[in-house]
Amino acid sequence: MSDTASTPRSRAREQTMRDIVRIGREHLATDGAAALSLRAVARDLGVVSSAVYRYVESRDELLTLLVIDGYDELGNAVDAALAGVDPADHAARMMAIGRSVRAWALAEPATYALLFGSPVPGYEAPAERTTGPGTRVIGRLVEVWEAAWVAGAIDLPDESVGPRRMSRDLARIRREMGITAPDVVIARGMLAWAGLFGCTSFEVFGQYGADAFAEPKDLFEHHLRVLVATVGL
Amino acid sequence: MSDTASTPRSRAREQTMRDIVRIGREHLATDGAAALSLRAVARDLGVVSSAVYRYVESRDELLTLLVIDGYDELGNAVDAALAGVDPADHAARMMAIGRSVRAWALAEPATYALLFGSPVPGYEAPAERTTGPGTRVIGRLVEVWEAAWVAGAIDLPDESVGPRRMSRDLARIRREMGITAPDVVIARGMLAWAGLFGCTSFEVFGQYGADAFAEPKDLFEHHLRVLVATVGL
DNA sequence: TGACGAAAGTGAGCAGTGCTCTTGCTTTTC
DNA sequence: GAAAAGCAAGAGCACTGCTCACTTTCGTCA
Image 1 (cartoon, rainbow over the protein chains, first blue to last red):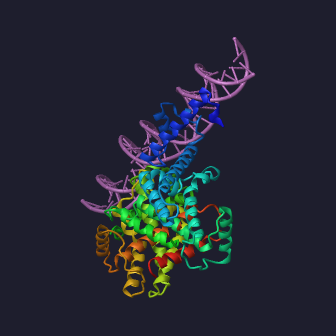
Image 2 (image 1 turned 90 degrees about the vertical axis):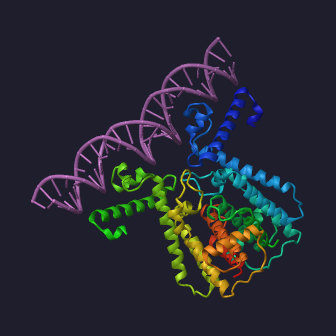
Image 3 (image 1 turned 135 degrees about the vertical axis):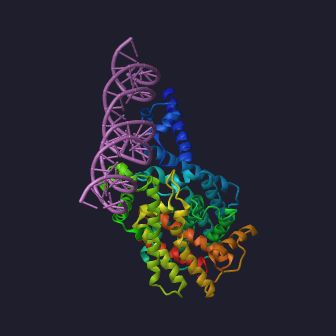
């Protein structure tokens, strides 16, 4: 691709791109998404503001780069956490995913907010560039659930989860993701997914109240255990 | 208080305040929180920008007014939904709360994002003015759980939910809220609360994917049922 | 009734923002 | 070595939050 060209100019260009993303991440962490300013990035880069537009089309484009960067980092954190867990211990794997999501969110609250908080007004992440890295976490979760289902480790009542039109949607999802787990596993898995991010968001965004808990991790661990049970593990 | 004074001038002032909040809400709905501009509000109000500062201290102050307004509206929506439900049918009451939260969030996504999404950068809602209206929904939920507990309608294992320090925190919460339900009810209730907002946020913020479900309400209903079961109802 | 004083509204101005465009300069390529 | 492409600069436009000196309006009280 472009990095094989490696002319001096293209190498300088890529270095500048990396610098821009790096400085953008710093500003994101310190000032938040809406305060992200291309002019400020340009100042830190030691360059006049208009020069940045040679590299980044717009402020929204920079946000998109940071979104992709954030999804990648979160995905790497989850993968790293999974590396040390027995592939056959499905509950432990789901717990590891949950813990690593929470830990990463607390470590990078601004980036977490950019990915999972309210959308930045007037900005919409271009799906074709963000859905790939954006689905890594749920992808890993689905892998765990599917493996557990195949291994017969999921204990759930074989209940109907909704009207037929919903089963059709779930069947399509099953087909697209190439899994075999039944409706109830997928539906409850999505609840666990939303619950995981609900708990994480409440903690990161301070919805529980300033210091209601001396050790919020205790509460999260309990919630995570219940969520694991919710999917029948 | 001040509305009893009712001098002509104070009445005009209050009307202007209402207009500012109304226009602010309109802009919030159409453009989002970060795009909320005092100058634009002033234009719609038919007044020069600096005049608005006679009524509102700053842009953040306006955001605070909108936050309070939003919490009030959500609280009213929940109360209205509860009005028609049998007080003894605890599960139905919890379902009603959940449905009304979701419905209001879908009807007012921008306000919902302001309340429960990522915090607006550089802005922090002053707790002393927002915690009151901000706790109405969780307050109603706690009422339902407590009533169900007292009525013996909650079926949960009497399990330990975490280390002793967590029980201390839960005991403090129990005391402050004047309830009697045990740790597991409170802890699982908080999970249900976070789960409710996790599901709602995923739907409002489009995390499920553009149109993965023909009728997202089906999925939400299923999730709500599971959440109700999570608290033992 | 008329004068006074407080409140409301004005407009200029500062510092910041995103973004565009022209103008020079440097590097790559032919 | 000349042409083409890439890069940085700086001016400029329209917008933002917010302040301040100023004028107008209006309620109250003598």
